[in-house]
Length: 263
Image 1 (cartoon, one colour):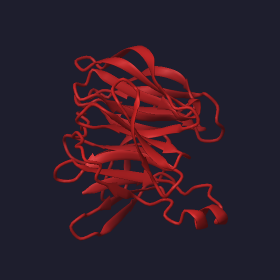
Image 2 (cartoon, one colour):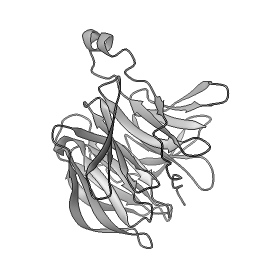
Image 3 (cartoon, rainbow, N blue to C red):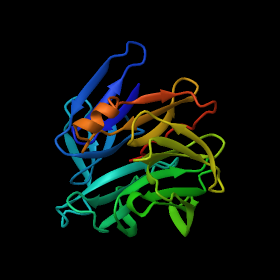
Image 4 (cartoon, rainbow, N blue to C red):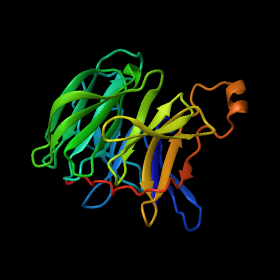
């Protein structure tokens, strides 16, 4: 099954590739990201915090609410490392101010901040060996990398991985060769970066605002790409009628299995 979020729906959607049927599970809050849990079910990063999500009823059971004192903030991009820790970042849902924070949620449900002064958190991903962690602030047009300790979940030695210029880096994933695939919001494209940060490949899209990408399929050789249609007027929607669609591309390489939350 292929899962994705409709952030402003708000809803979690699921595609059965065999039948082509799409099921929709409404959620009570704006939702930024999801992850599978090792024990079954889903984890959801939403407006008010990080929750266990009942995939049948859509009910949210709080696990961490680190920003109850910031009612204008919400969670956005999130992903699990391969050891089962969930990382997710917050942002203002009202203004584009640098008031967001990047958090790590451990299996113990301890929630630890790593980085603050974030405008729009995105692009969380890890290298195949788990020793490099990636992160982007979309409005700063920059993707960073950290040295990552898989045993402790500590991220150190932050450095610029890629300056995307006019491009606005949104969600990412890493393939089996260690290259980072990034959805370039407003750029009409997906960009593949080498582990050294050089552009290796570009896939042009029929929509301006791709939002994230991940590998799936039985051989992990299908690249799925989500996109957005929010804030597009009638003229723009006529120009890109597929805005808001989910796309599938076979780029000729394979991805990696997604981590599952251990808590």
